[in-house]
Length: 204
Picture (spheres, rainbow, N blue to C red):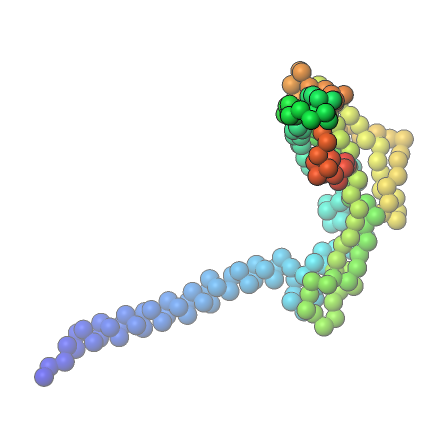
């Protein structure tokens, strides 16, 4: 009985190539995400959220006090209003009209920044400055007309917010709301769940 030598050699060579490919991929490719992860979060023996200290310039990039340096968030609100409130209370069906969108631009600034020991690490000796806690203050601009605004917010040495005499002009705002809408429009709704939602989002 003759052995198919060529076929056996071909299979052996293929297996060798497959093994070498696995070694190379494991060494050069699979290790790259780990290297990138370590570069981003630091050594696994420390806190993965240790980004800076209070004296580090990087803190200003995370939470600049100048509103002009912070990205804004545009918010569109739609509300359901009962147009026949008295009749509805007397037992008639509600006539509900959706009003909106009411457009606002939100400026946010972080303050009262405090560092604490991170709880999101398994390190035996966590970095005492591994977590960053802060409060957020929001300012809103109604986009019912073209407008400009300025801010005189500054950060105190204790990371609190204060006000200065100098004002920083914010980027111009373009009108976004429709002509028939106004922030003085009456919105009537008797749904407890709906009203509680509005109350919860009152700062929005």
